[in-house]
Image 1 (tube, one colour):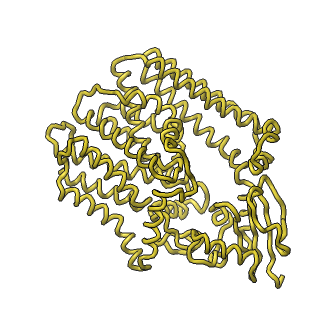
Image 2 (cartoon, one colour):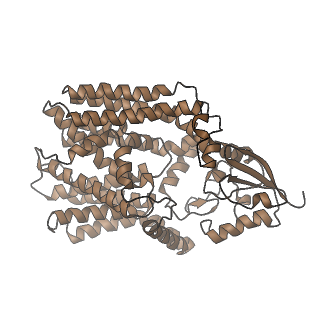
Length: 520
């Protein structure tokens, strides 16, 4: 917004080739309306949630009935990570919605061509394929070619399951790809035409590195995403596990969609388990099929007036107790950090606990509420009141998780980065260089209100050698304005050894330095 260059994504006024621009366009539009602030940064995902939940209700109602639509939307809203992501500023909720829409309309295309499917679809098959390609193109324009990889892998696995029977003709599949390329190619082609191939080359190279290395800075064991999904989608994940063996369907399209959903779930999970970079939201596309299958389990119990098996009830209760106790322990320890601080080996974490997060003690009610609503909801489920019990459980969890997001997450942020953010904000009005040394963050650019005159003097900020040379110039070179440095106490830097670099203060694990130009 400051540069006025809306075509090319930038970070620190340098080309940012890690992501395409669509989500950033949405954020920029929100900031033009609501101002440059954290609320506007999260607004696209909030709108995404407003679209997603009624969409799931609508699709679910067409597939079964309004009860199923209600349960599917509730499963998504009331699960831990799916619901909370709508309050975040990350790309994935919008990215996943576009993939899901493409996936859904592609299935509509398949059903329309199959006369044995009695799902009511009024349009020509190519209309649904056109929509599938359009939303796939939007997904590619949001986060890159991973969208097309996910979709095509799911299509391929379905083809294998069909024993290699062609359920889509080659010309039609090429039409799908052409529409996808046309939508995403508007930007990719224009960027290459105006700025040459360098940006695209770096973008492709970066995505390859994500697949083959821990380039994003996060590794993990092979089952990382399975654990993240099963715990992060509580309580829906408990019902989902039972749903793997669901076999009762009244319509052919219901059985077919169940297969599609399981294929999508395992395709995403296996794909990102093989990818070397392990980040919690990479597997978030599994939330759609997981909540669908979970809703199907509860709906089936509701339809047949069945009580929920004890193993499901107690699994939900045990997990809720563990999570609730963790939420109770957090403010208790926050008010009494000395209980654990002296035994901690991590010097940065130990210093973090010195922060005044502002715990009142009332936050323990959030954890107590989680245990209470879980017990109440599962009691109704055990009595055979599936719809009522699931509504109590999921709405209760949604309210608890939303309350935790408002009352507890900001206090956790006080430990992890508030001292640094406060410093960046304090210096944002100065004509100065601000650099985070020894750790990766974007907070210096956003909260420090970086201006073009103070941008890093290099071509590629992700290039370690160029970044090192820039930091070296700030610390040793003939700077023309004051330079501020922020680092962590557990990072080894040369700042404390430089005679013309002075320590301003340290706070909560962060060290703050300044260096004056020679003419001042």
